[in-house]
Image (tube, rainbow, N blue to C red; front, side, top):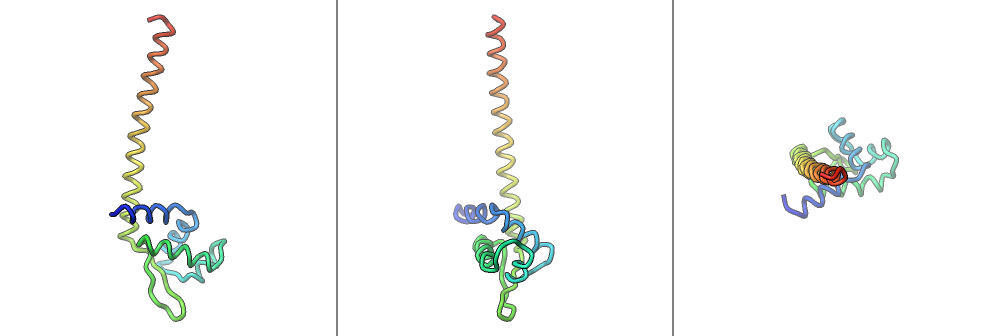
Length: 117
C-alpha cells in the first residue's frame, strides 16, 4: 500500500461513526446513506460525507440503486486494514516491552546504588 492509502485508511477507520458504519454494513451486507442515517446519531448529509471518506480509502464501494447508492464493504481492503493495524499493534507491543526492560534495568541500577553495592 502507498503512504497516501495508509493515511486515508487510518483516517477512515479512526472515526467512531465510520467504524460503526462499517459494522452496520458488514452486518447487513449493504445499505444506503438514508438507511444508515436512521440508525446513527448523525444527519444523512454527514453519513454521505463519511461514506465518501470510506470510499476514498477503498473500504466501501457504491452501486446505483434508483436515486441513491447502495454501499457495501470491500472485504479485501478491510482485511488489509486489519492486517496493517495488527502489524502496527505488534510493533508497539515490542517497543513497550523494550521500554519496560530499560525501565527495569534503570530501577535495578538505582536499587543497587541505594544499597551501596
